[in-house]
Length: 334
Ligand code: SF4
Image (cartoon, rainbow, N blue to C red; front, side, top):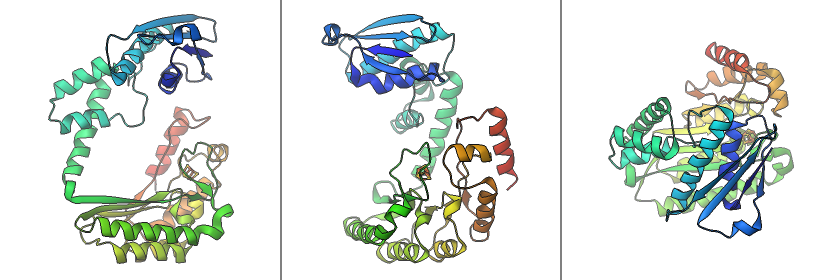
């Protein structure tokens, strides 16, 4: 199906919003007529559904700045799509991945629950249920942040951009390790230079957390994990560090000597991520491991760590509610 819009700089938002109403359709975005695209005071949106239904909306700019105008456009488009499909979206016009950041900013700005609720409802058409959920989560996050060192503290993220293979849905900076294996030592040397720089620049601050992510950090060989993590410990004062996490995300990258190296270097938390407990889905999404291999890796990791995170993904291809429930049940048995 197609949508036509008069300003392509809003493509991403309107594609996401239209797709939220028509989840199984491919939505193509086209520019709507050059003869109207120069009219800056108004925005035009037209949707043509697979059933050949057509709706159009014209949104006036009454002096709003760009973020306000974008929200106004999304509300107007939401209304016609909702009428067209008979659906309401629990998160309203929000289509990003972190809805909690809106209530979080308002809590930090000392706004009341009522003010947060009114803002989310009026600006983004969010339902009461999701307003309650996002505000509660934001309050918990604020509580955690307040227990850290604020402006006197900092956290470090170290990215390892290699994985055993590339998953179908990957949107991260990651490359198959086989192609880059002979340059990993060089990469670690570059990380060491950055660690040197950080240790000098932040010498008067306190480290709250260290997170080594990616990619898949456990694609590094045991001696490379030792080299990197021992350098972190040598150069940075970790005496007040609350947590040192390393993503051992892909079960097919985990070995006993790597786990031993992580533990030896003070790592307190790892993740072993199945994403789903259905073998056919794992094949579909390009994960080169089975559910049994995940279990094996998890129980091996359990010998070394009691704080293990397991990521799951909802909405994977071919997965319905029953498959997701099966995944939850299997994870609960671990
Ligand atoms: S494990 Fe994560 S980072 Fe690596 S390819 Fe898969 S999605 Fe991308």
